[in-house]
Length: 66
Image 1 (tube, one colour):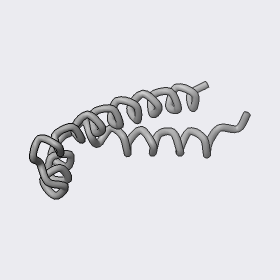
Image 2 (cartoon, one colour):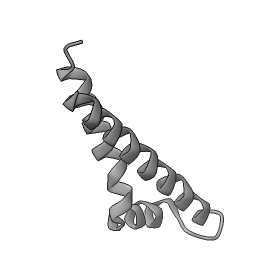
Image 3 (cartoon, one colour):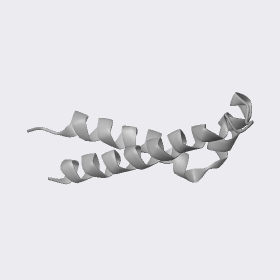
Image 4 (cartoon, helix red, strand yellow):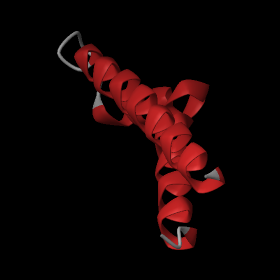
């Protein structure tokens, strides 16, 4: 049961982080370069939720036994 909670938490993190990162892509047509975009998402905490969520999901899938 514990691994299902980790899996669902990771899924929530991945969705939240991915959504925010895609939302920040809207700044590129407004004049932001790709380099400035990468610096922006590196400085935002919520963009780190996506890789953290993927890590949680992967760990939960590996350790699930059922």
